[in-house]
Length: 342
Image (cartoon, rainbow, N blue to C red; front, side, top):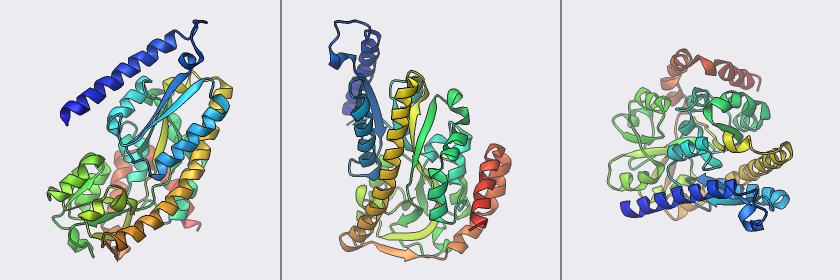
């Protein structure tokens, strides 16, 4: 297995070098039209049937419909190009052009994105979706784009994150001592500690085997993970505590985006927005199907817990996070105000 990963990695890096070489030969009038097209790679750690990946196909179609003579869009699902954190480094270098990843994966590069890891910062999914769809929100998140080496194009919804486990979680008391997989984020670790559990950061692709081997007792994510990643084969309990609403971001290489003409950039921006609209629609459809399948085929029990009981345990973290990371305070206060007005 390690050998295969190594071979894939070497093949990808070789391809990246080749892409740079071809780009440098673009002025050669003898180059064929196929050679003159720029390869644009889009990475995702999700499977092909996931709403993120299906929405990326809309992005591909929209760009190639208008700029198909210049760009060849290629989508790489299933973390083919590597784990998100590693691919984000390639994004910064410009050898991969686009990536879809969770805000929890981004916050170690830019603390602004830790806003979405704050537990219960959103109490309404409707306001959450409205907020992440607002171009002004994206603009505020991109304040450090030149320094970061990547720009957020749009946000994809990822629903609400909840705990699911091998043994049932019906109250906060049931969290005590449980080893729960979380995305690598200091905020997530602090959240689990506040709930009395042990946070276990690990790569998304490693969760199934860790659950099988009881290395961890559970994880936290949306309902579709039960079916898409087959976690429902091991975890038979899904508890609606709704602790986070954190989107997936379609980010582009700042280096690549700077090479586009204003007309080309407009096409990429419009394609990203078309993908966002499609992803929102697909997400809600996909979630309904996943819940039905998890219940009927996998025997998963969906548990309604006292959300306030969980929220009260972690609310003190809000002030701690603001003090440690004051850059997010303006956006945090904006969200609080939005929710108070509804």
